[in-house]
Length: 255
Image 1 (cartoon, rainbow, N blue to C red):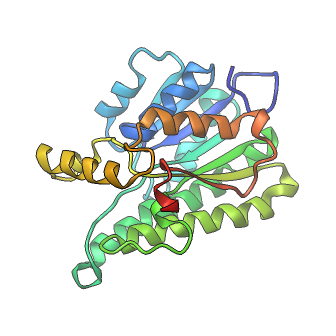
Image 2: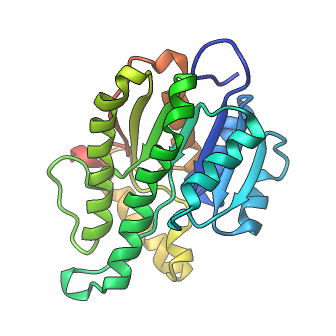
Image 3: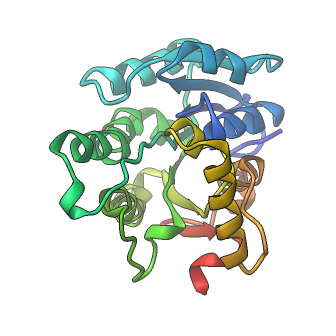
């Protein structure tokens, strides 16, 4: 059984952005390990696809950028599971463009979804996580680690770099309450996000091929691979990992 605290009740997990891609795979991976999962996303139909065939997954359609969403999401998990052991802040949006192309709407949407929502979800979850000795996993991006630049993706990268900084800071702040905070920074993962963003199939496949050619491992990643790392970071065996930002990107970030 997947666990954050040794033997005991089945862990209770919240995964945001759980309708597609990494979030969907993460919700399923936790459930496969015996956890009870609240899969959160904006679209009920995609959440239903995530939960199909997985008895341990419950779904909640919610816009995590709304002011009452953190209390609603955490309250729903506590009402259903009676506890909370893991919060996975995975939901994110990207609006690509250089500085000259930015609009207030696009920049603000990324900041609200990628940075502010995780802050207030973690805040809402703090007391139950402290009670269980739980874990916050922030999903960043290897493209925003270190001293790298990211032309055309500045606001998205800034929100992910900010999330990594929060990971380090919260790990210190919350250590005395028994809460661990870690960050998983994926590289390019074939989630179909380019297609959902409006790319045609040929362009998307060309992008993946280009990135695979630049990656030492010779390919892009799969959502299931990232999900397994997220689950692993919450296990008791990973208890000494705190404040860690772990890049899983086939070596792209070290080239």
